[in-house]
Length: 235
Image 1: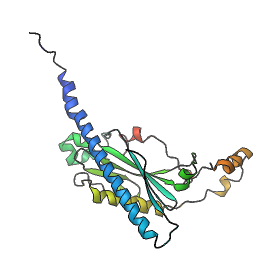
Image 2: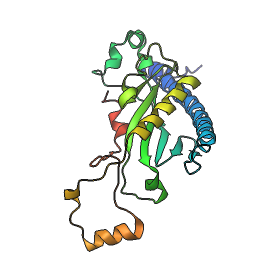
Image 3: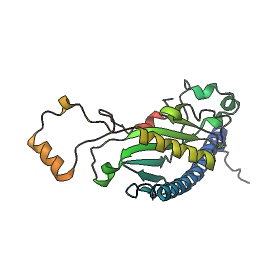
Image 4: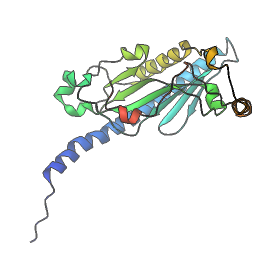
């Protein structure tokens, strides 16, 4: 009887450990993102109901943009939440490897990623493709639903205990609320007068016709779409 050819044991080992873990991380992150969308909807409804009693012109809206994207619009701002469909780990110089929780099991160092981007509402409303947004935070979730958050202000230290923090609805709600507070506190500032003293006919016509004067809250900020390549290199 002919024997069945044996697969390379190293490949089997990697498939059953690393690849299997990545698939689990993806499923856990997807589950958490669905819960995040639920939180966004509830927070938007609650805020909208309460702010209407104060000022009916201030509207808070939740928009489901598909399986891996959602947004919340409020006042002059919008925050877009995006779940990346890939799973990441970190460079060996990253502080995550110093954590005993990760050292005990290297598979705990694989994370799904949810990005939070802050844009001006008018940038999307008027399709101003030259406008720029800010990455204000990103949530990393592993196979055990343990998580940590990188980002601006409170995001940098509020959720940094990957060994002890397990992501759930209450923590997702806090993350959303922190993102709203950050965006509301981060005001639009006018560009320097000396940088805009000259304008060509072509530029003024473009501004007038389709409102493509590039705008961001902070002059000079440019978000480069390199998160995918940098997630494993940057702390």
